[in-house]
Length: 496
Image (tube, rainbow, N blue to C red):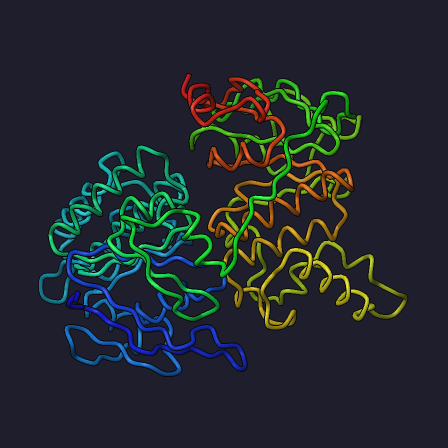
């Protein structure tokens, strides 16, 4: 039997009538990578928040080295040797990389900070994970992938013996992912322990020593990574058999009307001579390694940035001076990659977040037709299978995947005819991902919705798309059909 250095016993957490955790007992041993998997809303984030002192449980106890402990605040957990690198980027953008890594862990001489030793410590922790990041750079100058690595280095800098890594590879390239895996293996070999949360089941199988499954806030069992399969993991998470459910790509897509035409779009330093067509009812994937310019193209089409040259036509009309307002009014909407910073209104309710662009449809002479609005929001909550306690709750009460579903519902409710979706399923579990993909396909097949679908997951972009724009270093390298594409062929294009 594994001797636990940290253990949770019968942890329960209730928010009013909602029970986020229902008596979860789980532990971790020295030199162990313990994966925690489950659907969105299963309780993973709440449990990790309890472990790192961010949330106090309603009932249950925590134990370190057999002794019962109580975390009143995150600093208590850090003192006990537990540190978290959360899924959402949580850095100070105007501080340097080194300052962020050592924030709260500065080296001191008496009452003053020894900046030389502090910087040396920051560089040491950073280079253990990635030597290519300049410790003197401001965080806002880094890519999202680099920021994620800095966040992991900051967690390690607290002298943690237990690391909680929540979706750590969501923004990383394959090279960066392998470097992180090497670090995790070294950390484990030195006696450290890791709680590893990821929806990327291949990673879980490769890295973990044990796999625990949470379902609906309860402990649903343990799997052995040496003998289990991805299908078994999905069934354990969902409590049912989950089918892929994606029909074959459309046939004769070229015969359909063109709804979005991009020609020679160029923004100096970001992308060059980007051209493609999006047809009615098509899902057009955009693939490529991180840094290929996918997000930059999407933002430029939507009018968040301006092109240096090139044209964009929407439904046959050229958009001369694009702005987000103009695009939305013409039926084009953009779902950003950074959900927390750019996608949600954190202080508003689920209903308010979903209905924000559509409020004009529910206005009368003197008041808002609240009952009609609530009825339509409820309809999209059901169609997208969003797990909510009440539509009036804050959107921050939802898991990341359910927040993403609300954003998708926002634009479907607005009757957008073209959606540009940037990493729409990042951080979403397998079952929810299939549900979203099937719902998107239903809208494209039956209602003529057209989608530009940006994803760094090659398997996903092949599954969901009809054709795929492959980019590398800001240039289009090819547009194969999804029916003929393989992960290997896309990688070959992306790296050419």
